[in-house]
Image (cartoon, rainbow, N blue to C red):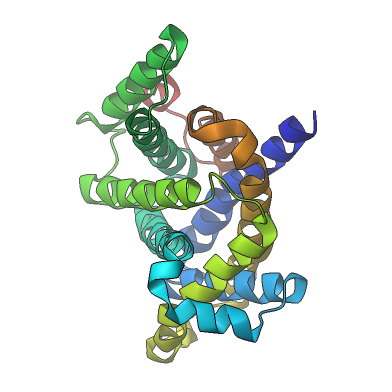
Length: 265
């Protein structure tokens, strides 16, 4: 029951990320780059209050060979976060989430197969249906997203798949997610000085901060907590609930159109 509850909260946080990002970008309240930087920095600050960094962590950070998993987690998190924001510049909440998590499901299932996992008939059927939904969504037509943005969102999916893979055996979820956020600051902090912050409104900054702290920092820690019990395949299937939640949120909060193609996909 606890795993179900924690998983549900984490998936709700993922959907909230899509809504918060789209809400900030659709009104030009903030640009994608500052949104992402604030998201990562605010997440890192909140997690630093919960799990304080220490000297040993900084020393270990330099030794890449001993911390491959942590570095993979940090790099994957950054790839996902930056691509996620850029893709949502011209893509509705539900559509972006569908492309993102369909990509994630396909990638994680392929990885699970490479690691020796066995598929039953229902799992294979689920993979086929997810892939079919993605193809249907990307077919040329009025409701099809811009191909370049769809590809960027798929890159975000690859990044998130790497982040999930890194946490599949997590023993200290809060600490490991905190480290991933902190290490992401290595390339995020220098970018702060090259961003034009004048175009960022208070609303945009607040939405990015909410995305970074609650929906990302705490949401991801909760996800890392349940990942070892779910396994890669179950985690991949469970995340397909997110596009449904994001679609509903987009319709309710942003009055986004609900096309038949999107519903079918």
